[in-house]
Length: 444
Image (tube, rainbow, N blue to C red; front, side, top):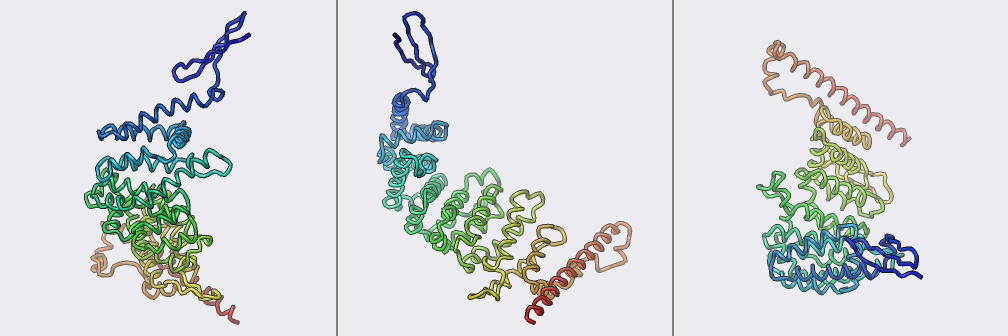
């Protein structure tokens, strides 16, 4: 006959099996231990954390939320979240802490914690997981309550002039939007995109131009909020939210000052969610996203020396935007039943800004545009017949001086530049002529 005794040592559960003849000690796998043991430990920890979060002392609140977030991001974070939702599906303690800190500095800690809870993978809907369905529905209900009842308070936080609180609101709203198309649509219909001061959150202040101070900026959180609607990818929502032109203009106009991580996030989201046929976003609305300033930003990014993945992605997006008529810039007059006029003026303006001699991506983009519609090559040549050199420059004022030995290398470089430009323009002219002849042949 055997008797089994359980004990816990440094978080590991053991069992001692006592027999009549031989005693043995065996380690029992944690998965074989009843879940109530683990649940009891989590409940005790949650009780402690929630008590600290609801403390009047801001340091206790701060430490409590930070530890809660750290635990949620650990390997056992999913189980912790499930236990919390099971014992408090209405999130009464967090709402109480929100009420206690509203309008005060500590509110950012509470909102940051809620953002992490909403973003947790264990809180996302999964049709084959009953526990996750329960957690997901509870979180959706909590998020909907915030959208319906807390927006006025959130607007006040956005106008608080406190960067931490402003960022916390934007991160919270983005975490709600990413929970799914239903909540994203509710936020899109409820949120006041015209709120005074809202668009300024997309800017880097002058004193934030260096890397250390950029970290304190609200821009990254603003970008995340704006792009979260596009991440959801629901066609009807995309068409509606993209009409918030000022918000997306704020995102795209600042790309030139963003880090590579932000650039790749924004451009890959546009590429995968908007610049595709399935998005159902009409050409006119797509073209609004890529105005002159935005195109200039992308040209600058693609032309950066050692630009890496960000430069390559910027180039690829430019090629998509400038050569696919569905994106609103390249004309397609043969399209039926609705020909696309595009925006030739904007495209030609972009072509004139490209440094095709010095930058490979710029040259490739220029040729891609001409290949897409050879008439752009003709228009480009008419405005820049031999875009070679500033003839008013000192190097042209006295040609003999150029031949002097100290200037010989500059002169050789000029000759090479001249020949490259000449060959480039011959190529463009050839493409234009070939396209025109093909057009005549098709007519006949």
